[in-house]
Image (cartoon, rainbow, N blue to C red):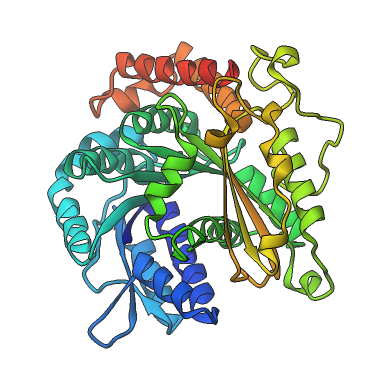
Amino acid sequence: MSVVTVQLGQCGNQVGQEFFNVLCSDSSNAKDKHYRDCSHERFFREGQSKDLRARAVLIDMEPKVISQTIAKAAKSDKWRYGETSHFCQKQGSGNNWANGFSVHGPKHEEVVRDLVRKEVEQCDRLTGILTMMSLAGGTGSGMGTYITQCLRDTYPHTSILNHVTWPYNTGEVIVQNYNSILTLSHLYQFSDAILVHENDAVHKICAQLMNIKHISFNDVNKVIAHHLGSTLQPVYSAASSSYRRNAIGDFMGSLVNHPEYKLLSVLNIPQMSSTSLAYSVFHWPSLLKHLRQMLIANARMEEGIDWAVRARPVSTSDKGRTPGEPGFNRSLANLLILRGKDVSSAEIGAFKDPALYVPWLPVESAFSCWSSPVAFGGYEKSATLVSNSQSLLPPLNSMVAKAWNMFASRAYIHQYMKFGVSEEDFLDSFTVLEQVISSYSQL
């Protein structure tokens, strides 16, 4: 079973290239042949010269990033993109969501459908589509949203997982909050789940855990790719004595148990520089204790966790608190993925505490644990937690509030109206996201 990845815009293509780097490096270094074969079948296909070709389609409205992405992949000498699996033009979307959605999307819909179809036809069986895009730009967000809508129409029974990169709180694009609310509100209709990485949070990981002095987008993308790889690489199924085949479908089944709740976040431990790794020893009790507290306190990394925050039964919860207020982070569903040495000895009972979850869903349905004895990313032991929880309420509420303040003064609205996006379209987006905020606030 295979996954086709669609990389959209500058951010989507750069993250995608790092993602496939991580996948290829991990699977190639694995001593377990079944693990390696499962990973290659899932994300790669064989080219004419028997080399690995990513099951991916690259889309951008400017050629520079696509050519750089293709060249970097080929330079790795381990894998490459398909020779005709990309599409670009010579004029971008000008950081305008409406331009990408209303102009470039419809104009190039057929060629993109054809590229994806050709990639799908080379899968023995398609298990899901993974799209990668930014929330804040023009092509990635606007055209990415339109393409997601087209993919839903074309593959109505295939799971679609959108990976989106949340912009910096103080980004350089003045209309990033407009672009973001338009993207999220539309994706909520067409996507099965939206997996989010916040640039601010990843930047802190680079600075405080990876000890990088001058952080580049490449550094940020590598951390995101590591998280995605640790989430989507094969895991072992004891029930079938083999590796799980349906990556995206199993993923959705574990985390998205209600169509009102589609926002997913990722926590990963340990994370450190290669120089620190050489002098570190890891134990499952310590790793899982820190990871659980990261979940409860809504912390993106193990450094500086607020240990005073405690899980509380729903009768004494802060249910209905103002979004963005500090408090216990309640979950709808959690997926714990353990990789490395002695995974069978890891005690996961603390993640089955009913106080972590909503009362109307049994813990057996809300919590899942996957594992693999194959180490990942150079770590002898590592744990990843994918969470459908209240963790994204603070940034989402902040984004909607900023966009609403601009909209109230009609700032830059004319730039969207000239491409066919009306004030009513903005109001519809606000309505959708305010309902999402309300739903997550009431967990």
